[in-house]
Image (cartoon, rainbow over all chains, first blue to last red; front, side):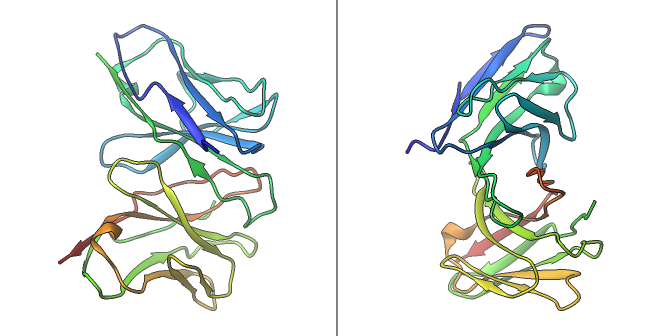
Length: 115
Length: 110
């Protein structure tokens, strides 16, 4: 299994540009999440999904859109990039098991710089 | 929502036990405590979780106080590769909404 994969690894955008960060998992996990991590800070939840067709907001959803058309993929869209969105973005997935059995597996991250 | 409090940083000598504390005084009865770590800038890695009993796996031990208001992660024989940021998390609800704090930076020194 490849686990959780993210593309691209690095990206530089200009203010106002849009782009999609890709995330895929091959573990048949129902739950997927997106986090951002600013320098020296912990991870903050952006959006999450409990299954195909179902998404919800986390702590910091503004400026981001998500959709979940398949179990495997959970792309994150930046609609109009801003310098404040410069960060490292992590995707994670987990089983839909009961509380305490839902270990999250994280991807390697996408390092985004908005100029 | 249960929140956690951890020291900003800790030092540990290589080969010694590293004891990382976490305060979660507002935890609810059915909320689990999870520990993850992040080495350098990689994605976080699961370590261990528990509800009220002490837990042990190949990586670490988790000691939860009887009142569940605090816990300690124990790395029995720390190595240089254990240098990382360690996050103590109490999961909110049933939809995998993990709220990471700032964590504890563990520095393992030779």
